[in-house]
Amino acid sequence: MTRPVTVVTGGSRGIGAATCVRLAADGHDVVLGYVRDGEAAEHTATAVRASGVRCVTVRVDTSEEADVDRLFETAAEALGPVTGLVNNAGVTGPLGRLADTDPADLRRVVEVNLLGALLCSRRAAREMPARGGGVIVNVSSAAATLGSPGEYVHYAATKAAVDALTLGLAKELGQDGIRVNAVAPGVIDTDIHRAMGDPGRPERVAATTPLRRAGRAEEVAAAIAWLMSPESSYTTGAVLRVAGGR
Ligand code: NAP
Image (cartoon, rainbow, N blue to C red):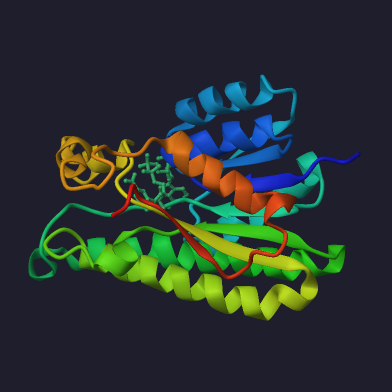
């Protein structure tokens, strides 16, 4: 039996890395995208291959159309036609009020979180129908419905757009046998908080989270793996919240 071939953007670290490892355990060959941290990408790829599946790493800025084309072309050459896509790559920029946020940071967050997901989804939507189907999972955020005032309303806005993309594309591609869903994580313990200038954020937010703790990347990966699997065969257009009750 041929294995699913799944592209995971931002697969080098955090939620993406946990997703690559989990999908490998579920029998997927994995195309692992990363933008800067080649060492982390190779480290995760080694963990993926330990499950006995194939893994190729590709350096790709998902906000660049040519990079996205190269990602899918490399995937097809190395592992065969892509059957699944996890749009996980994302950035927040520094924490703060909108009035104080640098326009360059606004632009970057929109380009990576929204344009990147659109470009990768577009490429998948051009390839998958000819093969009779496929699965796309977008990594959104609980921020999409919380709004994140004082922290990053621009980031929340891009994730709300990802939810709209999920719903619209699910309706557009359902007849082609392609399911499109999203997960909306709450505060998960990854490097992203350090990158936004607040490494202590997961611990602090835990106090106001109903389950009284931050989530682990593996807990989000489990939800993504379910949405990628035939177990969720009648689920499309859904946003699955994995946020400890937030
Ligand atoms: P992370 O630990 O900071 O990892 C980010 C990943 O995205 C890395 O693999 C990074 O690659 C990659 N990346 C960044 N910019 C990219 C670009 N332009 N093109 C391609 N890849 C790029 O982040 P995380 O916490 O795992 O977050 C993953 C996703 O979950 C994001 O979409 C984020 O918005 C979402 N999310 C996270 C949380 C949370 O609390 N952690 C909550 C809700 C939603 P390099 O390793 O090469 O830098």
